[in-house]
Structures are given as C-alpha cells and as structure tokens.
Image (cartoon, rainbow, N blue to C red; front, top):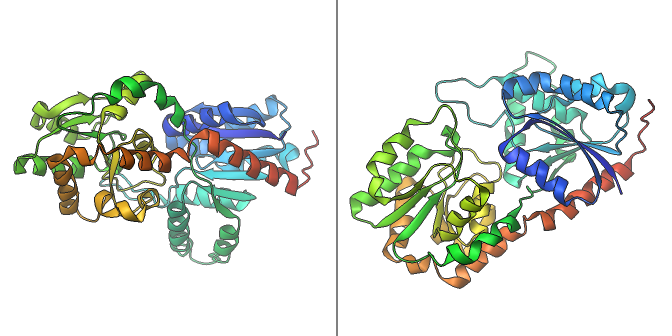
Length: 378
C-alpha cells in the first residue's frame, strides 16, 4: 500500500467532490491537507504557506504527493524541502488559469497561469482530467512564455508535455442510483429539459435561455428544471428566465439534499450545456448516467462523451443548431426516452465512477512512488 498526501487549498464544489470521492474509494493510505474553498486568488498565492505549515506540524511521511492546480507547488516544496526533496509529486489539473475565460470586462492576469506553469516544472507527473484540457493548455503555454522579454524557456514546453498524461475525473455516480426507481416513473408527458451547471458566466446561461426563448416562440412544448449552485453574484439572465419561462419551470434553484438533485436527473429527459469553458464536464456525465440525452456544443471536452452514431442528435455547432436539436426532441419526447439510447449514455458515463477510476488513480500513484526512492529525512 502506498502512502499518499493529497494537497487541496480550494476544497469546495467539484474539487471537494473529487477529494472526498477518492478518499472514500482508494486502497492507499491517504492524508488530506485541505483549506476552505474561498478567495481563490489568495488560495493560489498563500495556500501553499498554510499547507506547508500543516504538513510540517503533522510530521507526515508520504510516499507520494498529490497536489491540485490551485496550489503553488513551488512555494510548498520550498517551505518543506528538508522533508520533501526527492519525494515524487503528481499535479492534478482540474482546470488552469491560462485558458479559463476571464470575467466579462476583465483582462486575464497572467500571473496565475504562471503559477500553474511553475508548479508543473516541479511535478514529476502532470495529470489532466481530459485530452481537450491537456491539448488546450499546451497550445496556449508557448504564448504565455513569449510574453517574456528574454529567456522565454520555450524548450520546457516539450519537457512538460512528456510528463503529462490524461487521468479522467472520478465521480460518485453510483450515489445517484437510489433515486432511480421512483423518479424514473415521472418520464412522461412534455419533454423535461435540465440545466445542472453552476450559475456563472463560464457556463453560458445567456445562450441557454436564448435557445429556450426561441423554442417557446416556435410554440414548442417543454418543461424546465434549472439546478446547479448559485453564488452571490447571480447572472441577471436567471431572474429574467424565471419570469419569462414561469409557466414551464418545475424546479428553479439548487437542489438539496443530494437525493433531490438525483431525483431531478432521473426525471429529466435532456441535459443541455452551453458552456464557454469546460475541462471535463462532471454535471453532464452525472445526467448521462441517469440516462438523459445530452445536447452539447461540439467543442471543449464534450465530444469525448458522444459516440459517432449519436453526434447528429447530441452535438451542435451554433445556437440555431441547438434550437433545432431541442425542437426535434420537444416534438417527439419518446426519442429521448428510448431505453437503448438511455442505456448507451449511462454506459458511457459509468466508466467515470470511482469504482472504476480509483483503482486507476491508485495504480498510477503507486507506479510514481516506486519509480523514485525519496529521501524524506526529518
């Protein structure tokens, strides 16, 4: 058994679900060093200082470190060098600050992308949650380095790519199963469209609601469940949609407890994404596991989930195509409820359940630990 120390300075949302899911399913010994998921900029600057202190206070002696992209790994290793020099390190990239779209009206602060870059230089393995994520990072990285006036270190790009692998996100999908029997019976009547993403700009809510308004103007009949977590700064599109689509809404707001969220996914027929940023797509995979038909942009990480025979049904390039895909399903909801189709999407999603993914995480971390003989003298 390998001893793993997992470092997560931004323990909330999908990051927390990932930490807790792996902790519940790993066969390795796992020490968790985490911080509340708030103030993301400060976590990227200062989280390493706090986690380094806790690492030293705990006198931990892991075989391998597993850090996430929100950690300034260079600072952490510098502050623990007497205990971590030579210790193998894996860096897990949930997202990155180089390709993540800035808030409307804001310019990207390249410093945070540089923190990701410098952390990669310190890591023995760099693990991306999707092939799209890996390729988009390495497509953009040379542009970051070319901002420098000299000593651009462009040769490091190939060296980092050689250390990089795809290790998909693990998800607690089986936790959705208990809600299946009662909720699945509700798949009758008008098509139920679900939107289960964070209520933030990068998930493209404006485009989603535009598509629904266009459907309504065509006379299409449908029901709507808007799930996902809202935050202090709620995009104004949601208040407008609550008013304009009031007669079609059956749920509007974060579904708690988790069992309620699961029941809505099992009741829904179609899950839609209009995201402008997505490095993996956990919310879509959860809905697919519940046999929803995914209607997704033909970009970002989404095409990996859709077999060629379903692309005309599920993938769109423009908002007009999105409306057409949804109009077709509204006109004939039984298409979305066809059993073989739902089972195909469920099977595609099931490969990301932690029962499948945790052994793969364990294997890779054990291999990394055995590749090196760390000197962790106190």
